[in-house]
Image (cartoon, rainbow, N blue to C red; front, side, top):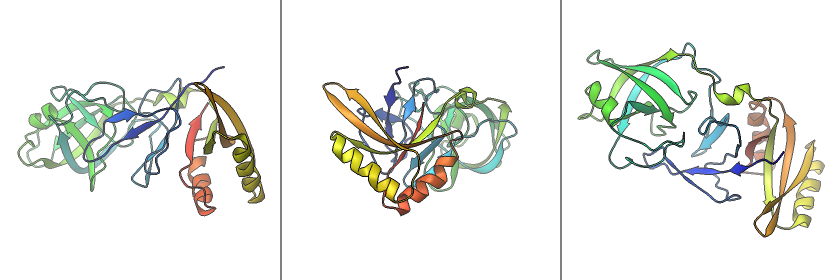
Amino acid sequence: MKTWKLIFLIFFFSSCSYQPLSLFERRQDYCIINKNGFVLGNIPIYRVGGEQFIVRQSSRGYSETGIASWYGPNFHGQRTSSGEIYDMNELTAAHKTLPIPSWVRVTNLDNDSSVLVRINDRGPFVDDRIIDLSREAAERIDMIRDGTARVRVESQADWLGRYTDLNVDYYAQVGTFENAGNARSMVINLRNQNFNNVMIESVNSGANTQYLVKLGPFSQPEAFIDLESRLTRSGYEGSCLVAE
């Protein structure tokens, strides 16, 4: 079966929207590979700024208290992590780990006003903030002027990230090469460092062939966390989680 690969780099100044990259571009601070079949934004594990996040398999029972922020005109009309175009006048929000979509009630603990929003984006990746609201949602709970507010976020409907329903295998992609010999050298080095189940996958990219060095498969995405740490300690930084 032919599998499509997309890599998204999220540019975070205070934003959580993304711009698509070409097929094999890599970045150290944000590296995910999305295979056909996932809801965009529901990659099981992703990294931003050196921090790793695991997307929840369900929103059931979620409740958290913390700081909310909002984002508006500077991002209006840009694409969100879900693939939707951000509309600051809709009741939506960004969250780091809840499945997309999820529905949560956000209550301003300073004035007890609340609003129901749909999670369709990733973020905020600033300080200790737990949710980033659209301008309309922020206005509903009277936090536009201050910019942030102390809130309680509670799940209002159980939603499973689609990746939990797929029969997929997971791999750690360690390297991408245009030269097959370089890929074979990496495989030998990895095996000499006692990494098991190392393989090379060749993929046609336009007129060129790319050689991907991968480890796996493993059945649960969480296994990537320990494997990536081990790879980094061995000098292989920037590995990516792949689902097929």
